[in-house]
Length: 310
Image (cartoon, rainbow, N blue to C red):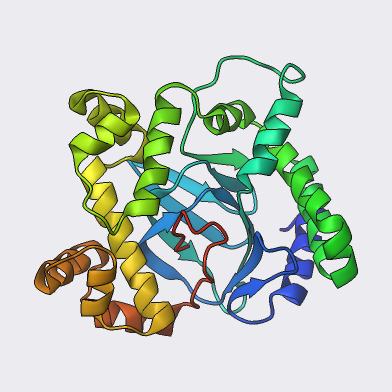
């Protein structure tokens, strides 16, 4: 049975997200999601952000861990990570969710403002966190949804509502881990710098030695820290980024697999087709048809440095 706050959140989302797929809002970094059907496990690449599920269930699998985000938990992602995701939804009870692309400047400013004012117990930075939805967080989500229903309120009050949600995340159960991740200190910060470099230059020739030098680490140390943070090796991450980007190019621009492969840095069409099928389980044309048939196309990410395929 839904609690009163959750029921009101679902009611507002039902009214705002009437069509299946993504619904853009008056706030560039905020979009709504509705899915009337389940989605089997599929590879995704999340860019930094917050995913709040008000009805239905999403489940992510990364590095042997399961991250569930549903009406009781939200997901926070501090750096782009490739993982496998599945969705539970039906036509009678569709998945209803909010996705907030992380405004790194707003988040960093808030971290500075919170410095010294909240529990500063040591916390290890994490790339992905599933945290409990406390009543205060639900109330903040509801206020944002109510604001999005009015264009003037969304324009004037929307940014403050988003900032309020960031505050809830940064002071919540795993706020310390998120604040530490956003501070980009130590090994996490150096790997984060490399991830940004990869997302800005994935179509160029990238070698592990150069990426390790970018992080200021030896190759073995870089490998270990990179895998610890992203759940994969550096070159597998580069390959995954290229393939996710190629899939989005084919979806958004209708280009051929060969053109998409060339655009993301593959010289050999046969190698691109082989590695694409290995990641997604289908050849490029069949995977694009499946995506069009089974789910709505996500809009282009706000921050071009990252690729998002939720």
